[in-house]
Image (tube, rainbow, N blue to C red):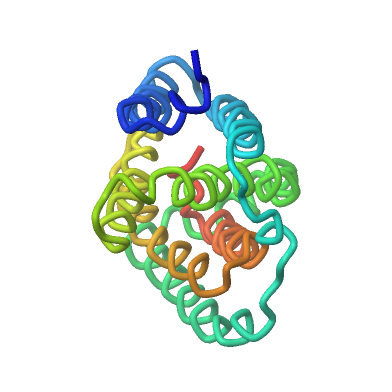
Length: 210
């Protein structure tokens, strides 16, 4: 049996997609609560990492490359979206506005340090690096693949059982997708994702991701 041939076969790719991007989030939402929901994410990221380096000739440089030019160009977007999140939270969810850092400062500090490592890095590896490397030949168009990525990323966040998380992540995924393709840097996209996460937990929107 040629394991590598099976791994690259279209039926196996589709099955993998359904299991890890469909069933895994579904059962995570049902059986796990709170911070425990990130446990499957970490295990899947490690598993995909092993598969990627075992069966492909993936360019490792994407993990170490940093594009300072693209980072500078993204600063106006970072500032604009920060103000948008502040305005949106204060207007739509005033009871949550800055609640987390004020009312639960210890948990907020823990989140501040663990969020990039335990959540952002596994997410960006799974949904950007692995997804686009692994499934790029499943759809005839790069833009269809990008749309599928955004839909799947948003639907995955249904595990938090509210409407804000999937909509917010569907919209945010487009930013991360274009960052990844433009900068060709895992570090660039992780930095931007982490920054928005910090803002989100600070202003109160993190309530929908706990």
